[in-house]
Amino acid sequence: MKQIKFLILISILCLLFCCKNDIKDETKTIEANISSTSISKCPKHILDQKENNLNISILLDLSDRIEKTKVRQKDSAYLSSLSKSFVEHIKHKKLILLEDRMQLFFNPEPSDEKINEIAEKLEAVFTKETSKTKITETLSLYTNTPSELYDLAKHDAESSGGYPGSDIWRFFKDNIKDYSIDECHRNILVILTDGYMFYDKTIMNEKNRTSYLTPKSLRKLQLNKANWKDEMEKKDLGFIQANSGLHDLEVLVIGITSHNDENPYTLDVIEAYWAKWFDEMGVKKYKIKKADISSSIEKVITNFVLKT
Image 1: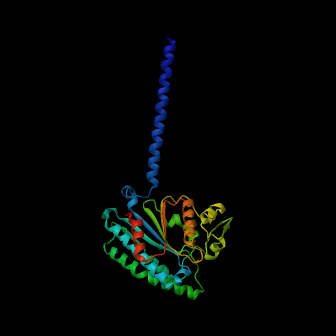
Image 2: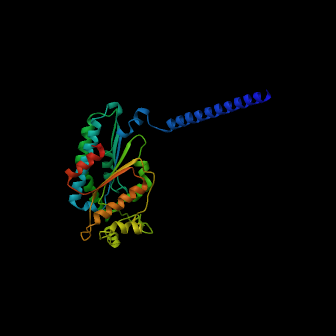
Image 3: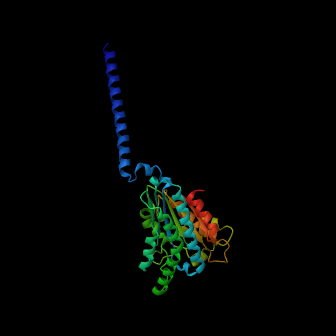
């Protein structure tokens, strides 16, 4: 009889202990959910539409590449195409769900304040309070303003003794998460560059990794044979990793150009450098395209931005 009572007592204690643990687990889950909700700055209806809320950042390489008139013309056409895709996306959204933006960046910041003023004009933010005239205004600005921006940048370089270069590596290290990634949006970074990377204040070497890639440094690598990819892997050539955890970022690089006509693999090597860099930083999705006629690149931009 005593044994039976003892067994009943043990059973009751076990039951109480299990219930207590279950309550603790439920409390932790509730607390975690409350914490997650309180940390997020997005209203639920915006967060639920995250993949449909565009946050497009444009990083312009204002190095000596823009000396060429064709480069400036192509860049202007690419920017116009980008604005068309952005506006097309806007037109297909319900007014109450508008939470989309597009902005322009340089690194380093140009010394001519007029260039920065143009960049500010090109910032397009669409919310449910935005007037419909903003659509026409955005298309007009991105079609007509870039040529003025490039003319100013060229004049700035001529008056200051040369182009400052473009510190793309440092932008990824110091600015990418603050400037181009937002938890409420689908984050897209579009980089207009020739694929070479150089800034005189950010020259670093770590074994066979660098923070730069120039026509001269690329020629020294002698990756001019069919086994260039094996050589890259064997020597661990590439850019120094600038960041990590970029799983909420998509990157479209446009304008890759070869400055070494003697090496038929130059474009492939440049693309491999960028791809390896993005992979190591955890970029969610990326596409790297060489410079091409505007109509061809417009299709690339449309497919990337609108997922068509």
